[in-house]
Length: 281
Image 1 (cartoon, rainbow, N blue to C red):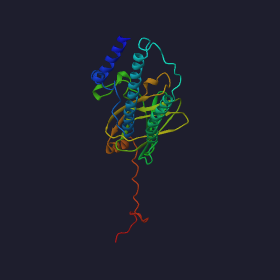
Image 2: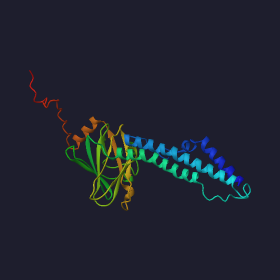
Image 3: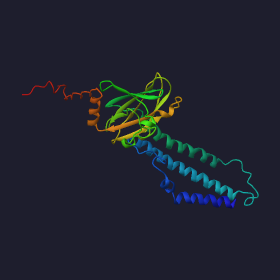
Image 4: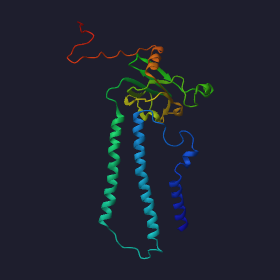
Protein backbone atom coordinates (compact mmCIF):
# COMPACT_ATOMS: atom_id res chain seq x y z
CA UNK A 1 0.00 0.00 0.00
CA UNK A 2 2.76 2.44 0.93
CA UNK A 3 4.61 1.66 -2.29
CA UNK A 4 1.47 2.32 -4.31
CA UNK A 5 0.83 5.62 -2.57
CA UNK A 6 4.45 6.67 -3.09
CA UNK A 7 4.35 5.88 -6.81
CA UNK A 8 1.01 7.66 -7.21
CA UNK A 9 2.32 10.78 -5.48
CA UNK A 10 5.49 10.77 -7.58
CA UNK A 11 3.45 10.45 -10.78
CA UNK A 12 1.17 13.32 -9.76
CA UNK A 13 4.19 15.43 -8.83
CA UNK A 14 5.80 14.75 -12.22
CA UNK A 15 2.65 15.84 -14.06
CA UNK A 16 2.43 19.04 -12.03
CA UNK A 17 6.11 19.98 -12.30
CA UNK A 18 6.66 18.89 -15.92
CA UNK A 19 3.46 19.66 -17.88
CA UNK A 20 5.39 20.44 -21.06
CA UNK A 21 7.55 17.29 -21.02
CA UNK A 22 5.37 15.41 -23.51
CA UNK A 23 4.75 18.52 -25.61
CA UNK A 24 8.49 19.15 -25.91
CA UNK A 25 9.02 15.75 -27.58
CA UNK A 26 5.89 15.76 -29.75
CA UNK A 27 5.68 16.69 -33.41
CA UNK A 28 3.25 18.99 -35.16
CA UNK A 29 -0.42 17.96 -34.76
CA UNK A 30 0.46 15.07 -32.38
CA UNK A 31 -0.81 16.89 -29.29
CA UNK A 32 -3.46 19.53 -28.85
CA UNK A 33 -5.65 20.95 -31.58
CA UNK A 34 -4.78 22.44 -34.93
CA UNK A 35 -4.47 26.22 -34.94
CA UNK A 36 -7.88 27.86 -35.19
CA UNK A 37 -8.58 29.59 -38.50
CA UNK A 38 -12.20 30.63 -37.90
CA UNK A 39 -14.21 32.22 -35.07
CA UNK A 40 -16.05 28.92 -34.58
CA UNK A 41 -12.78 27.03 -34.03
CA UNK A 42 -11.60 29.72 -31.59
CA UNK A 43 -14.80 29.36 -29.55
CA UNK A 44 -14.44 25.57 -29.59
CA UNK A 45 -10.87 25.79 -28.30
CA UNK A 46 -11.93 28.13 -25.49
CA UNK A 47 -14.75 25.78 -24.53
CA UNK A 48 -12.33 22.84 -24.60
CA UNK A 49 -9.93 24.65 -22.26
CA UNK A 50 -12.83 25.55 -19.97
CA UNK A 51 -13.86 21.89 -19.78
CA UNK A 52 -10.26 20.86 -19.20
CA UNK A 53 -10.14 22.99 -16.04
CA UNK A 54 -13.35 21.42 -14.73
CA UNK A 55 -12.26 17.87 -15.56
CA UNK A 56 -8.84 18.41 -14.00
CA UNK A 57 -10.46 19.66 -10.78
CA UNK A 58 -12.76 16.62 -10.67
CA UNK A 59 -9.87 14.20 -11.24
CA UNK A 60 -7.74 15.82 -8.54
CA UNK A 61 -10.65 15.76 -6.09
CA UNK A 62 -11.56 12.10 -6.75
CA UNK A 63 -7.91 10.99 -6.67
CA UNK A 64 -7.32 12.82 -3.39
CA UNK A 65 -10.51 11.35 -1.92
CA UNK A 66 -9.40 7.85 -2.89
CA UNK A 67 -6.02 8.34 -1.27
CA UNK A 68 -7.66 9.67 1.89
CA UNK A 69 -10.10 6.76 2.09
CA UNK A 70 -7.34 4.21 1.49
CA UNK A 71 -5.16 5.73 4.21
CA UNK A 72 -7.85 6.56 6.76
CA UNK A 73 -10.26 3.64 6.49
CA UNK A 74 -8.10 0.59 5.84
CA UNK A 75 -8.38 -2.30 8.30
CA UNK A 76 -5.20 -1.36 10.13
CA UNK A 77 -6.01 2.33 10.71
CA UNK A 78 -9.72 1.74 11.26
CA UNK A 79 -10.27 -1.74 12.73
CA UNK A 80 -13.83 -0.92 13.84
CA UNK A 81 -15.75 0.40 10.82
CA UNK A 82 -18.66 2.78 11.22
CA UNK A 83 -22.16 1.36 10.92
CA UNK A 84 -23.65 4.62 9.58
CA UNK A 85 -25.88 3.95 6.55
CA UNK A 86 -27.27 7.39 5.73
CA UNK A 87 -25.95 10.94 5.83
CA UNK A 88 -28.48 13.52 4.65
CA UNK A 89 -25.98 16.34 4.22
CA UNK A 90 -23.58 14.14 2.22
CA UNK A 91 -26.34 12.89 -0.06
CA UNK A 92 -27.53 16.46 -0.71
CA UNK A 93 -23.99 17.59 -1.51
CA UNK A 94 -23.19 14.77 -3.93
CA UNK A 95 -26.50 15.43 -5.71
CA UNK A 96 -26.39 19.23 -5.88
CA UNK A 97 -22.71 19.65 -6.80
CA UNK A 98 -22.89 17.48 -9.97
CA UNK A 99 -26.04 19.33 -11.01
CA UNK A 100 -24.25 22.66 -10.63
CA UNK A 101 -21.30 21.34 -12.65
CA UNK A 102 -23.60 20.12 -15.43
CA UNK A 103 -25.42 23.45 -15.60
CA UNK A 104 -22.07 25.27 -15.71
CA UNK A 105 -21.12 23.14 -18.71
CA UNK A 106 -24.54 23.12 -20.42
CA UNK A 107 -25.10 26.89 -20.63
CA UNK A 108 -21.96 27.76 -22.66
CA UNK A 109 -22.38 24.52 -24.60
CA UNK A 110 -25.86 25.47 -25.84
CA UNK A 111 -24.68 28.98 -26.68
CA UNK A 112 -21.80 27.55 -28.72
CA UNK A 113 -24.07 25.09 -30.55
CA UNK A 114 -26.38 27.97 -31.50
CA UNK A 115 -23.40 30.05 -32.66
CA UNK A 116 -22.07 27.18 -34.79
CA UNK A 117 -25.41 26.41 -36.41
CA UNK A 118 -25.67 29.07 -39.10
CA UNK A 119 -24.86 32.63 -40.07
CA UNK A 120 -27.78 35.01 -40.50
CA UNK A 121 -26.46 37.03 -43.45
CA UNK A 122 -24.03 34.88 -45.49
CA UNK A 123 -21.97 36.64 -48.13
CA UNK A 124 -21.71 33.54 -50.30
CA UNK A 125 -22.89 29.93 -50.43
CA UNK A 126 -20.87 26.76 -50.95
CA UNK A 127 -22.57 23.43 -51.65
CA UNK A 128 -20.64 20.29 -50.70
CA UNK A 129 -21.69 16.85 -51.93
CA UNK A 130 -20.12 13.62 -50.72
CA UNK A 131 -19.66 10.78 -53.20
CA UNK A 132 -18.07 7.34 -53.00
CA UNK A 133 -15.27 8.34 -52.64
CA UNK A 134 -14.62 11.97 -53.49
CA UNK A 135 -16.10 15.42 -52.93
CA UNK A 136 -18.11 17.65 -55.22
CA UNK A 137 -18.15 21.43 -54.78
CA UNK A 138 -20.57 23.99 -56.22
CA UNK A 139 -20.56 27.80 -56.06
CA UNK A 140 -24.19 28.75 -56.83
CA UNK A 141 -23.51 32.48 -56.33
CA UNK A 142 -20.65 32.53 -58.82
CA UNK A 143 -22.11 31.45 -62.14
CA UNK A 144 -22.53 27.82 -61.15
CA UNK A 145 -18.83 26.99 -60.85
CA UNK A 146 -18.56 23.32 -59.90
CA UNK A 147 -15.96 20.55 -59.86
CA UNK A 148 -15.04 17.31 -58.16
CA UNK A 149 -12.06 16.77 -55.88
CA UNK A 150 -10.14 13.49 -55.67
CA UNK A 151 -7.13 12.50 -53.60
CA UNK A 152 -3.82 12.54 -55.46
CA UNK A 153 -2.22 9.10 -55.86
CA UNK A 154 1.12 8.63 -54.14
CA UNK A 155 2.91 8.58 -57.50
CA UNK A 156 1.60 12.07 -58.34
CA UNK A 157 2.62 13.78 -55.08
CA UNK A 158 5.02 16.68 -55.70
CA UNK A 159 6.76 17.63 -52.48
CA UNK A 160 8.24 20.71 -54.15
CA UNK A 161 4.72 22.13 -54.46
CA UNK A 162 4.05 21.34 -50.81
CA UNK A 163 1.69 18.49 -51.59
CA UNK A 164 1.11 15.96 -48.83
CA UNK A 165 0.43 12.23 -49.09
CA UNK A 166 -3.19 11.27 -48.34
CA UNK A 167 -4.18 14.95 -47.96
CA UNK A 168 -3.54 16.76 -51.25
CA UNK A 169 -6.16 16.62 -54.01
CA UNK A 170 -6.34 17.31 -57.73
CA UNK A 171 -8.85 20.18 -57.40
CA UNK A 172 -8.62 21.94 -54.04
CA UNK A 173 -11.49 23.97 -52.65
CA UNK A 174 -10.79 27.70 -52.98
CA UNK A 175 -12.44 30.15 -50.57
CA UNK A 176 -11.98 33.84 -49.77
CA UNK A 177 -10.86 35.04 -46.35
CA UNK A 178 -12.90 37.50 -44.30
CA UNK A 179 -16.17 36.22 -45.75
CA UNK A 180 -19.19 34.68 -44.02
CA UNK A 181 -19.72 31.50 -46.04
CA UNK A 182 -22.87 29.40 -45.79
CA UNK A 183 -21.94 25.74 -46.31
CA UNK A 184 -24.67 23.34 -47.46
CA UNK A 185 -23.67 19.70 -47.07
CA UNK A 186 -25.36 16.65 -48.61
CA UNK A 187 -24.48 13.26 -50.11
CA UNK A 188 -25.33 11.43 -53.31
CA UNK A 189 -25.01 7.82 -52.16
CA UNK A 190 -24.18 6.98 -48.52
CA UNK A 191 -23.38 8.86 -45.31
CA UNK A 192 -20.27 11.05 -45.37
CA UNK A 193 -19.06 13.82 -43.07
CA UNK A 194 -17.42 17.09 -44.12
CA UNK A 195 -14.83 17.92 -41.45
CA UNK A 196 -12.01 20.48 -41.33
CA UNK A 197 -10.47 20.71 -37.82
CA UNK A 198 -8.93 24.17 -38.30
CA UNK A 199 -12.38 25.52 -39.19
CA UNK A 200 -14.13 23.80 -36.28
CA UNK A 201 -16.66 22.13 -38.56
CA UNK A 202 -17.83 18.51 -38.84
CA UNK A 203 -21.14 18.27 -40.65
CA UNK A 204 -22.77 15.01 -41.73
CA UNK A 205 -23.54 14.56 -45.42
CA UNK A 206 -26.83 12.65 -45.60
CA UNK A 207 -28.44 11.47 -48.87
CA UNK A 208 -31.73 13.27 -49.48
CA UNK A 209 -31.03 15.87 -46.81
CA UNK A 210 -29.11 19.15 -46.72
CA UNK A 211 -27.32 20.12 -43.51
CA UNK A 212 -25.98 23.61 -42.92
CA UNK A 213 -22.96 25.12 -41.23
CA UNK A 214 -20.83 28.21 -41.78
CA UNK A 215 -17.23 29.37 -41.79
CA UNK A 216 -15.34 32.64 -41.82
CA UNK A 217 -11.66 32.06 -42.54
CA UNK A 218 -9.51 34.66 -40.82
CA UNK A 219 -6.17 34.14 -42.58
CA UNK A 220 -4.86 32.86 -45.87
CA UNK A 221 -3.29 29.44 -46.11
CA UNK A 222 -3.90 25.79 -46.92
CA UNK A 223 -6.12 23.75 -44.61
CA UNK A 224 -6.88 20.05 -44.61
CA UNK A 225 -9.72 17.83 -43.51
CA UNK A 226 -11.14 14.39 -44.24
CA UNK A 227 -14.39 12.50 -44.39
CA UNK A 228 -15.23 11.64 -40.79
CA UNK A 229 -18.01 9.12 -41.35
CA UNK A 230 -17.37 5.48 -42.27
CA UNK A 231 -18.64 5.44 -45.84
CA UNK A 232 -17.09 2.39 -47.45
CA UNK A 233 -13.88 0.75 -48.52
CA UNK A 234 -12.23 4.03 -49.61
CA UNK A 235 -13.38 6.08 -46.65
CA UNK A 236 -9.77 6.87 -45.73
CA UNK A 237 -9.13 8.38 -49.16
CA UNK A 238 -11.53 11.34 -49.13
CA UNK A 239 -9.33 14.26 -48.04
CA UNK A 240 -10.42 17.88 -48.09
CA UNK A 241 -7.91 20.51 -49.19
CA UNK A 242 -8.89 24.16 -48.82
CA UNK A 243 -6.94 27.09 -50.22
CA UNK A 244 -7.92 30.28 -48.39
CA UNK A 245 -7.01 33.29 -50.52
CA UNK A 246 -7.68 37.02 -50.58
CA UNK A 247 -10.97 38.26 -51.99
CA UNK A 248 -9.16 39.67 -55.02
CA UNK A 249 -7.42 36.36 -55.73
CA UNK A 250 -10.70 34.53 -55.25
CA UNK A 251 -12.42 36.77 -57.81
CA UNK A 252 -9.62 36.05 -60.30
CA UNK A 253 -9.95 32.32 -59.66
CA UNK A 254 -13.74 32.42 -60.22
CA UNK A 255 -13.28 34.16 -63.57
CA UNK A 256 -10.57 31.65 -64.54
CA UNK A 257 -13.07 28.84 -63.82
CA UNK A 258 -15.58 30.40 -66.18
CA UNK A 259 -17.76 31.83 -63.44
CA UNK A 260 -18.88 35.34 -62.57
CA UNK A 261 -18.75 37.38 -59.39
CA UNK A 262 -22.17 38.39 -58.04
CA UNK A 263 -23.13 42.02 -58.51
CA UNK A 264 -22.85 44.20 -55.44
CA UNK A 265 -26.25 45.12 -53.99
CA UNK A 266 -27.44 48.60 -54.89
CA UNK A 267 -27.34 50.88 -51.83
CA UNK A 268 -30.68 52.33 -50.81
CA UNK A 269 -30.94 55.87 -49.46
CA UNK A 270 -33.26 56.47 -46.53
CA UNK A 271 -36.50 57.85 -47.89
CA UNK A 272 -36.79 55.30 -50.69
CA UNK A 273 -34.88 57.19 -53.39
CA UNK A 274 -32.47 55.08 -55.40
CA UNK A 275 -29.17 56.96 -55.85
CA UNK A 276 -28.81 55.50 -59.35
CA UNK A 277 -32.04 57.20 -60.34
CA UNK A 278 -31.53 60.40 -58.39
CA UNK A 279 -31.23 63.51 -60.48
CA UNK A 280 -28.34 65.86 -59.97
CA UNK A 281 -29.13 69.51 -59.77
